[in-house]
Length: 172
Image (tube, rainbow, N blue to C red; front, side, top):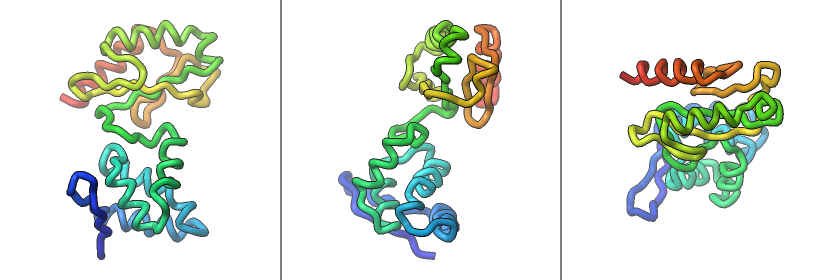
């Protein structure tokens, strides 16, 4: 199976791996045109690389015969496409009205203090990145957050401490 190679501004080429290409090819069978595949291709590359670098975005655009500007528009519209490196564990913190009414600001402050980071930042050890999201769809269990694919509900400072310890121990 061939790979697409593009020139990089840093004189390094980014190749899509065979695994990435195979998954993108599968997605192409599910959508009417390559533009519709763009978001799925970004998510595939992020799954393997952890984030979508400029070189990766350009390689995807080249492979799908899309403009890099159009694909960048898709990538920056969706806040779950990471355009910069993130920590091993991404905390998606809901700051919707429901969570706000349930004092999510107190939980947010607790997380920030415990990890010594604010929204959009990554811990020095690259274990956690803290990202606000407008809603996680579990308003009746507010406040909520996700770490990776795991949803955590009815947060308290004590629960947050347990969750952070749990994910730190997974990394050890």
